[in-house]
Length: 479
Image 1 (cartoon, rainbow, N blue to C red):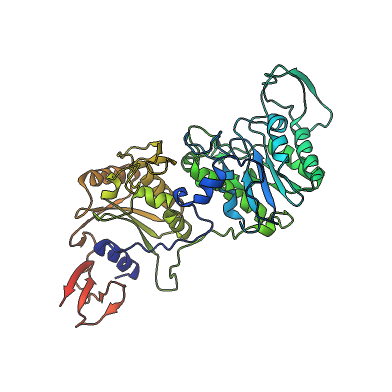
Image 2: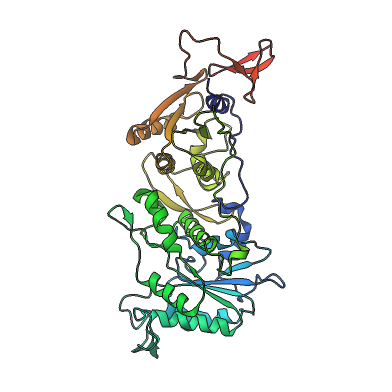
């Protein structure tokens, strides 16, 4: 029997702990575990610079709702900004990130109304990361629009929505004003592209060639660094495909979901990593996607991963696997022709908002809904069972691997078994049935040699071994 099947059977038959060892950096994490994020980056820091470490610089992030999330920033709307995760990619002992972005602002309105307060906290040696463009277009001249392009001289006189006469400048000119004033304070300005919109055209993610290019032109003109989130994200998101990219957004193609915010922050980190002259490069953590440590040495064949646990005592659910980082680790490790067994059970039916927060929306259909957690008040977009399973299966197929849904009839509730039957048919994947005697379709040929026996660590044991052994996919107690 292939050693990877033995690993899978051990997990299925014995209810053992699943072997995804998590890393501490650079993997999507459950935000309930991130007290730092809750305390520092949900709300805009006031006063600016309040989280500064003595003698260390602060990176002030200024932008719109794609960088942060409305006023309180707790995700009640299902929308998150990439600034939430910016600190994840920098050594917090050397550089503190403060997210001062505000939803609905353009370069013009932020410069007029928010920038004066942020400037009060900027000190010599600090950094300012500037990202605008989503709200600069259109003809809302009384409110927030800017003149297209980078002209340093073109202006427009308006009476704004506060009843005040105002001179409106070009998008590029507002960026120049941010840059010049940052330099005057002894800090270092860094321009950043808009985040990508999740719109596809002819099988590829659409790429903005206006605001992105204008911001890059001002960076070049001023001789400062440019973080090209959209340029990095475009080929990556195109490879993800339209369905997955849709999941990176919530209620549209502008505001990202939590995982979408993480991916945008990741793309920003990759852009910084690719440019050693970017002044933030020296603070950057390793951007290499972490992988599960497995043995792929010659002769071991393709690897089989197991996600989930159908036992009645399980603390694993599809939702927990998705948000905790376990799935990200497997996704990063998957290679073509690997196999992933998806095994879920009673935890799917547990409470959504309390008691471990393991439950899902109980449906094989696809839906997502923001829910407030009972113990913390934290908001999370919770998916249906069908949504989580579609996400996993989509990722598996993206990597060229094989998805198998496992119905553990000895542990999983009938409702979950029924969902699995629907999903296997919908997505055209194998449905494998497991009972108390093992996975039903794992059999040995009639002329096979006596199957070897394994202990619970997957090691071959000789005849006469006492204890629990696995043979031909079945568990035996040898006394």
